[in-house]
Image 1 (spheres, one colour):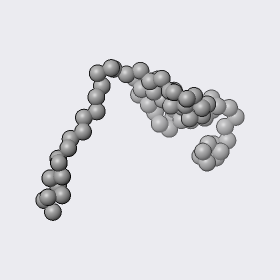
Image 2 (cartoon, rainbow, N blue to C red):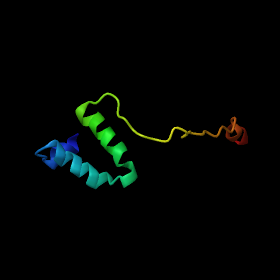
Image 3 (cartoon, rainbow, N blue to C red):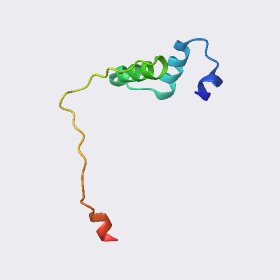
Image 4 (cartoon, rainbow, N blue to C red):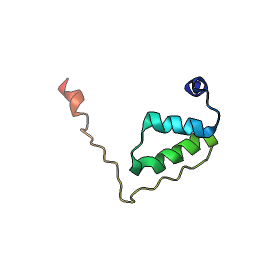
Length: 70
């Protein structure tokens, strides 16, 4: 937030434009940016971010193998 005060914005749109210029989200991620921006600066409780339903995060578990190597 200190950076925002240094910017000297006249409106929320000034802050949004500066964030877009600084973070430069790709066009396909612009919706995510807008949702997070509104969530942070306007207090929107749940940012709605569209995504594919079959997206999964996979975590590889080495079962502590790295600890055993030491």
